[in-house]
Length: 247
Image (tube, rainbow, N blue to C red; front, top):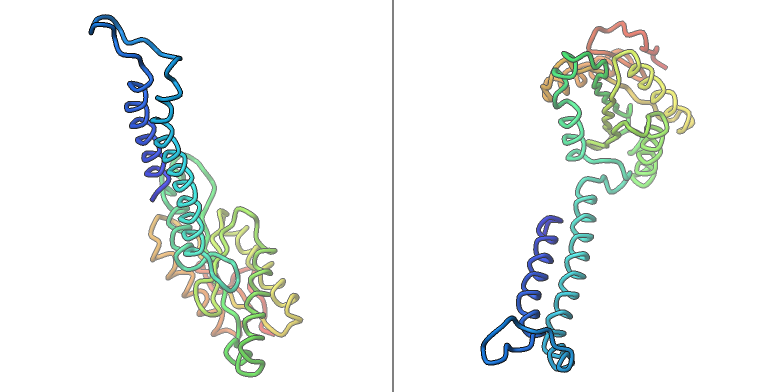
């Protein structure tokens, strides 16, 4: 039951109770003439008739609130990666689409805010997993997730979208996003004692085409992997000012 449906059910229950209870509290009209009079002398008897319906209404209201909390918690879990606590692929898709919506119109009106996608992939993670075991691999994924959160701002969307791949959705222009990407790269290396590094692909949106933006960032990430890893590549060209030499 949605929040709107819950409120509707409670409102309907109140209306039903009012329509059925108020006539019971009114005294009959003498000889069928004149308006109904509100009685105090027989209130106890009439309230005994009304109270069961009121109790049912209270129970319905409590049930609606509990149902709403359960639904909200289920929705949160459906959008959260169980291991790292970051947003999952579904949350990423919704986040990116929401930020891209109306970007062309905002630019026409002089809004300089951009939307940039950063894809990050842990280098040689399969080998690390095979050497140290899956529990150590899970701890490494959590460590990388925390490093991404520290490198980003509270308004940025940080997501784990697959095994060792992460996505960050930034409300920022290309230059600022490259600086954040480099901060991610350095923090991951530092927080894992240089045992793990990440390669990153950066793409800044020019329109509302979600698939095109993801493809641009993915191609940039592939170049970063192919050119030695532990580096950043941009969809604007291989010689990004934030590119780092292989280590």
